[in-house]
Length: 140
Image (cartoon, rainbow, N blue to C red; front, side, top):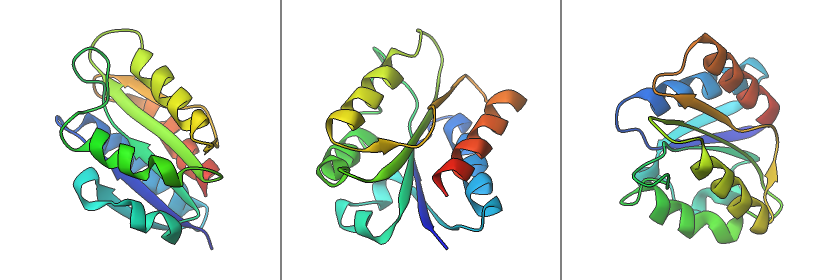
């Protein structure tokens, strides 16, 4: 059984809803899933999991949330090499540049993105929710 972490930050609940769907998808494939808010997860925990799904909305000028999520992610970045990961998040405006930048950052750190990242404009609809389930299943 694979051990999966779902690590997210959510200000409005949209990214949390996506995290819940990722968790569902991973559990549907028999994975043991632990869910963490960004402030609860550290680099020391990276080795405890076979795969990690990270979720963060776009903030400001299409960047990761800067007070909790980005500092945590910067801390774990050095442990991403060879790690299976998945990315998801919501946005209110823009064209998803924050996600493309984030994916590149992960590739440069040596992470293995297991599937296409999932983004939702505002609250995730049925299509985005299903894609999040598929993302969790792919990670498991």
